[in-house]
Amino acid sequence: MKKISFFILACLMIASSCSYDPEQLFDRDRAPIAPVLAIEGATTFEIPEDLPDFFNSALTWSRANFGKGVSATYTLRVSNNELFTGNVKTVDVGVDVYMRALTTTELYDWAVNDYGVYNAETDETEPATLYFRIEAKAATQSQPLYSNVESIMSKWADWRPVELDIYFKVVSGNWAEGYAVYAWSPDFSHDDLFGPWPGLLLNPVSNDGWHHFVVPKNRPINLIINNQGNGRQFDFLQNPTKSAAYEFAIGAGNNNCDWTEVEIPVIVPPSLYMIGEQFGGWDWSSSAVVEMTPVHSHPGHFWCVRYMLADKKFKWFPGRNWDNGFNSLGENIGFELDGGDAKVTASGMYMVYVDMENGKISVEPAKVYGIGNCFGGWGAGDYPFTVENETMVYTTTGSGELRMYAMSNIAPGSVQWWQMEFIILNGLIEYRGTGNDQERVNVDAGKKITLDFNAGTGTIQ
Image 1 (tube, one colour):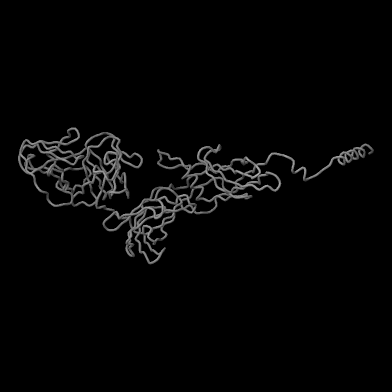
Image 2 (cartoon, rainbow, N blue to C red):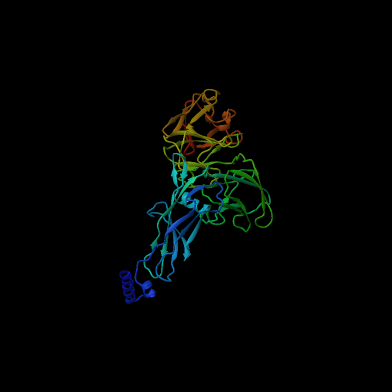
């Protein structure tokens, strides 16, 4: 008993000899303490189709300790790798804030639009796993503190974003200035997707007033239709999920339009152009841009014959501008796609036939024929031209009117030879198109007919 009492007394004497000052202890130099990050809620982001703007998860973290009474500014850092190298996204959180909610729209934007990886085999974008950490800064310290790293895995649900074709026709309340489409998103990630306000200016793609634009894969996205920035507009589709067509009834003032979904129309453009590396050098002012010839009595059917070089890219547009272009239709024959363009893999003389009525494009070895007395008779397909260098040639065997035409394997059976006819007039190849019977030129036997389709010229020698 005496030994225990003595031990307690000794401890009390030692403690009384030490001076204890709490304030002095807190101010003693020590290393700052970094925040500790945690994820509240789901650690998997299963991407829904409609992208509702609700909270998927929340990030919480402890206070960074830079010393008594020292505030800190917090920044959320987002990456697609644990080392936070490369393209790192930052979000300002605020001063002495210890929580940040994550919505489905911003998770989608990071996982798909910023860090998604395109898979060429599946033609899909695979969403990335997202890594998060918190950066803390204090005015009293030159170096920031970083929390531990946490992650959220992303995966598709039962859908994939695709490009959408949107059509509309104004049936009442026409705007004389024309129409434009502008894109914006709740998290500002896709503002100006169609360019700065008023966005993409739209021209009719058919004689009966249909307009068309393509919604890219980017989500979330909201659309505004406006009168090309001249003071009228209305909110249109929010996060569209399907290709569709609408009829507009536009009222007075802003945000006043009723629309009705209708069947997607078969668009028959009045013209079609082919432009590319070989055909104008992607310059609309070039005379080498191909104005394709309409097939007589078959709206939506166009053709041309050209000597085409291998691996030179091209595509088609309904007007002599960059609106509503395409590199393919539903059925593509004889050519390959390369990114957003088309190409052939072997140089040669080709017939390019576009059937917009039935959704077909064929790029096939050219078939050009003569017909009539100077060729030997009126049998369709009996007198084919042959390829010579980058031209097509035939030597007449009789005298008479010079009549020639082309044909395609995918042209409907109802297409007759005169509906794809052309002649040589004053040294130029003149196409009949949708016009009336052409002026006639008589030739004698033994004349070599040479057709240079790329130059648009022909000779009779």
